[in-house]
Figure 1: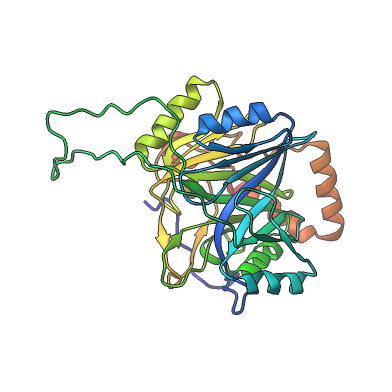
Figure 2: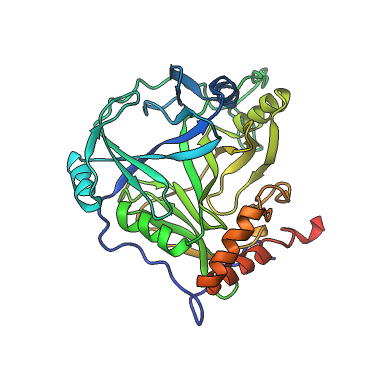
Length: 370
């Protein structure tokens, strides 16, 4: 029994080729930026999640992981709870100059911890993309050792016990984001053509039409995370979740215990993803935004070709509970209905794709869970 079939190229299928000549090549995902109406509440959740505060003012909060990136999460005080954008880095100062010329922007002094220079861009759906170079790395924080496990062929613990502390897991880095867009082709091509993102696994409808892609950084022979950006078709431009790496399965599970004790809202997990292989656990912050702890993800170098897979619920995980009905917000609110009606007047083909995508995700992921 195949959990998620690999699709072959053929009639009706559409491949997602790499960019032959991207404007620049992004080197790292730095941070996610959100607006929140209450910095104290936002900060408590993020600390319980495992992030470490760096700088806090009346209107801004910056938090880091254990790595050398000065901050991986930025919260700005505002009237609403919304996604504000992402930060990427490039390796050369000349890359910023290239981007500034290409998009009619300018190079500015970055205002967050670490300093450096930044160019502010917008993707085709208006998502802010801040591209940095020249920031001062932070001193990495000490990381608690990964727990070693006894196995039938390996004994690592005798006359000793496993007693991990009940405390937030250490977040090492911001690993990836999932961006939803009403125009998948335009959005995914922009990130590939602008920053050199490479498709790792492409999610398709039954007729072979791509509707989502796990994309990774192009670091040549140096392995990169299976995905840094997952771009997926949706009813509106939105960030579905942000994902943070922790050291191992015990850290993922201990994070669940801590967040459960704090009475936060669980979203999905613990399980193991199929594409990317991460062990995952999802939680919602006080405004409903999903945050993921993950461990043990795949690493690909630039030589690894893309895979093509059927987009369905079963293909999202190898083991774990089935995807909850409320994990994907598919409510047809008046605002969404109005957007769909307007879209139908000018692009009925895209409306049909949205309907096909919704239907493909409707069936339970496992026959034995029905």
